[in-house]
Length: 125
Image (cartoon, rainbow, N blue to C red):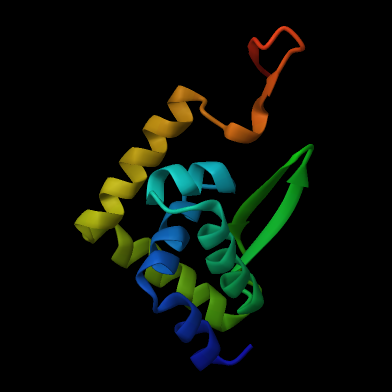
């Protein structure tokens, strides 16, 4: 991975917001969508760019795909993780995103975990 590719991928505001949220741990796309207030295809497009740059990874957990920061396996990624840890907490918008994520996680609202029973009643798994 080239440093300019890493910085190019992270240098867009929505992607930086996603990276900041992923500092909190693994997150489902629906929570990213709720916090960022953007459609799922847009979130997925940004995640694909971050994944292509080697900044995030995904894992499947049943019907959900969880995203997390890629492990710091290179000097560049270690320094980038350190940058995120030191720079993100000082940005008001990024702080608001973390608070919104905490509320979304507390509410347990995950669109992918909701299904309807034949009676039409919504069931949370």
